[in-house]
Figure 1: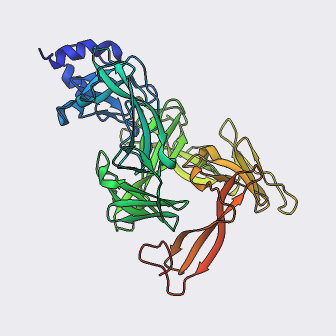
Figure 2: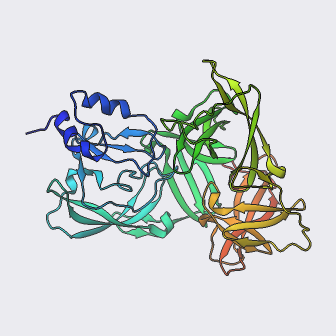
Figure 3: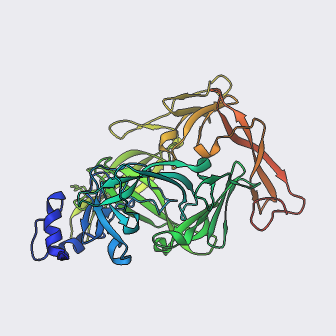
Length: 447
């Protein structure tokens, strides 16, 4: 006998939601779309679907049961934490990475607990391939389903899954970088090709180029005014609000792009949608706060006391200036600490606690590798410390690759595989080379 929505809600109420009442359905509907913290939100099964906090910090009800009658929500005994979801892997199962509750395909039922199977799989929205192991596990509902128990990148995610379900070597490509081919994002890294289908995202994306970077982006991110800022959420764990800024893409449209986060003066507001408003006494009085952006540049934000529509006096962000030209650091109390002076001829560039120290403009510049938009590792190459991503790693010393071709200058940007002081190898810039007939249409090589 099928349980009613209300009875199911009663069963899961103890997990985190409101107590069971006649208005259960409306209470769940009222939660959908509200801000949430993916680290603390309790995922629950709701009438065969999954109520969870997505990577953007918004409560969402997956269409597990309603969109496909062959799927349903189940509860396993153990939580699963295999891989993190990221901006370029929208197909990643956010629910299974933080909870024992997830959406399963009824076709994946099994008969012997503990039995394992292995197969190669491609994530369409990112193009990445994995060798994944599935183990037959019993759910709290008493059924047996295959559940992912291990996941290893196939040739770093660039491999090809064949018809037999095993992993073949990557497709060779010549020019490192990313470009759009229709609605597909083509990535070439260390002569390995990966193809992501932007339309395969949960919400179909489009492939376009923004600030020189090709990427998949949702039409939901369309904005109206270039440079316009929008706060998306606030984390009580970090006491920071996340925001994005409107940028113009090569397809002529405007899109919001995430710009990271900034510290709140007094924590998050009640619904965690932004920093909490801070009351002030005297109109036009100001308060300053130092912050680090993009891992290397520091700013002094100025808040001014202004009256809102209700007449309440609150501090509002009115100006951002670089802290000591961006080279300074922030104290624990939010003050700007000027950078130490240095002389490039005598300064020893180095790594300290994954922070790259360099001498720029007679100032010691701190670049925090872990705070980059993509986490990186500090390494010293040719006497200079810098942050290098996983994609920068290489294995053949002296190998030179093309990064991109600049249509305006008609020159190739090149990188060469170079050894670091700690014995690792990374691609670093090796200058440019002019193209006799300019760049090709894709900007990946000379014509």
